Image 1 (spheres, rainbow, N blue to C red):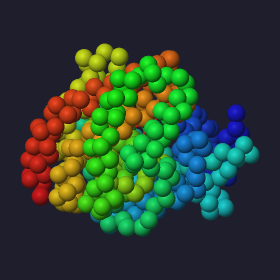
Image 2 (cartoon, rainbow, N blue to C red; image 1 turned 90 degrees about the horizontal axis):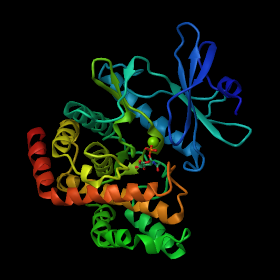
Image 3 (tube, protein in one colour; image 1 turned 45 degrees about the vertical axis):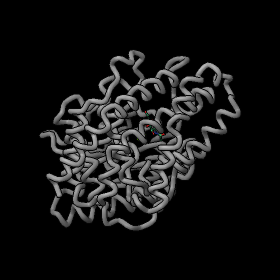
Length: 364
Ligand code: GN1
Ligand code: MG
């Protein structure tokens, strides 16, 4: 158990710390809330997962510059910069994170009170608001052109994932390859089209922008009246095609089943949710996107769902070393559910493209 009070004392917090409690049930970092006495703000204190984030100072540098950029825009628009963007709190020595005696990195930000979050986009209106949240985040960063650190290498780069994939198949560390031959074939059947999509990025047809990279709805803060305040969990902010955030949001919002559904008959793409998210997203972003980005927007959902299927299946083949699992074949169940979702997207692809085109036309 780390000495949390001591760690907290190394940050430039206002006021006097009253108590520190664990917060939430994140799968990646350990999160605490630092309550202060009187009027001083409360704070979020996090131990960052060093296995996943190998350069926390670089990650915090990304977060600090991106949030500073948003803060300027929010302030110019006369909105509330303490509620509509995360505020990173540096250490007493000015650094953006501190290292404890075990070698782990900690970082802090201001806690935003009176907010609401959701675990699932279980209404059409909520799906639309999620699109507004991510669309606004990207729109506020449309004029951010500084380089960002690549804090997780090749995160949504399918070329890089195929390098890992080929190694995993060759090593067959858990001896499971033979038992998942059908699933492996499903990946291989799509290799060429996925690599072709990625080449559009390398060739400059699809631009690189600032992306969040973890666009699930629980990463959006709403106020009590249901208005989007800001996007949180900025650990994976990097430079990448904006399409990745759209695709990952559709993957997580528009699945009629669960990410790890064993009952594949429950898993499909919800076109109403797709339509609502697309509407919210393009209401903010249509003016910033190029024609090529709009043309490929619907495909990005297939791309990211495919990548997620590959990542789950690869982790199963590797013997479950990356994702936390609750039971023996959890990663395989997840991979199969992603595969079913991908097939549903393929079946509905023409409609998805039509919805994107019609929605974009309304906002451009
Ligand atoms: C991981 O734990 P969570 O939900 O923040 C993963 C995402 C996956 C997701 C799948 C850094 O995110 O890329 O899409 O699981 N994050 C990282 O549930 O690998
Ligand atoms: Mg996350």
